[in-house]
Amino acid sequence: MSDSPIMKALAQDHARRRELEGLVLDAPETTRILTVANQKGGVGKTSTTVNLAAALAMGGLNVLVIDVDPQGNASTALGIDHHAEVASMYEVLVESRPMAEVVQPCPDIERLWCAPATIDLSGAEIELVAMVARENRLRGAIRDFLADHAKSGAERLDYVLIDCPPSLGLLTVNALVAAREVLIPIQCEYYALEGLTLLLKNIDLLRAHLNPELVVSTILLTMYDGRTRLASQVAEDVREHFPEQTLETTIPRSVRISEAPSYGQTVLSYDPTSSGALAYRAAARELSLRTAH
Image (tube, rainbow, N blue to C red; front, side, top):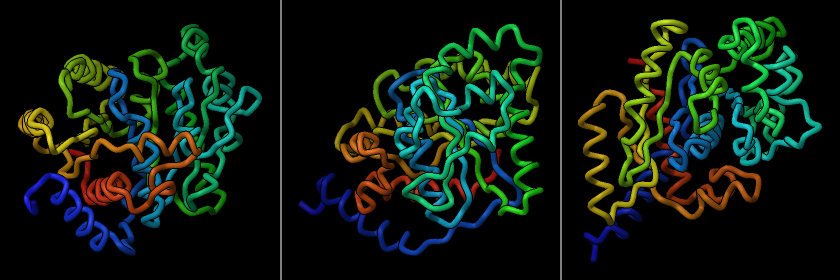
């Protein structure tokens, strides 16, 4: 019985809980800007963005989440108001409004802020097409925001995490041009690597033409079910192909992670002792200890 997957998971959670208790994360030397991207839907992209952000903030770091997905799921999970009348990333990208005017504090977690998305963003792809330097709109907005933030005397932001739509359109291109690092969540299921080749090819093109600093620094395995051979096989394949980028921590398939956004919370607020919350805290610690490859 002690060797069963359930008992192993319980033992791992207990060890993690003790290890992570009161943990304060080290701040990076400069603000790290990461785009969380995967054009394949349902891989835990938004869950990864908001829960990693929450875990980093709970570790004492200053974190901003930028939501450029018209569905606004990251904004919902962080408890941020993002109905149609709210100033959002649409105004920033299309109307050049300063990002400081749309950023809101997360109500549950200190040191965590969000620039929300509204449904208006769904039309931004078309409106951006006709604009000069359309791929650089977000990069310029973030640069100006960080500069104004520093001038105001506020504490420096340690991390900026950008959540983008499950596509490779102009919003995602903006997110990839604005970042220095890409974090790719990959679900431990059949077809896990499907579409990844296309994403990596597009990242190579962006690096060549628009953002030479961009690197795929982190890959996170999500929806891991230790009871299945398939999950273990997928994890093994991903680690074989991307040994340096893949985090040791895996995110388990978890009802708590799925439930939390419906309460306007991350899983770290909703159920801080759950296996999902502990896994994201462990992933955040690992992320904070790594540098871009």
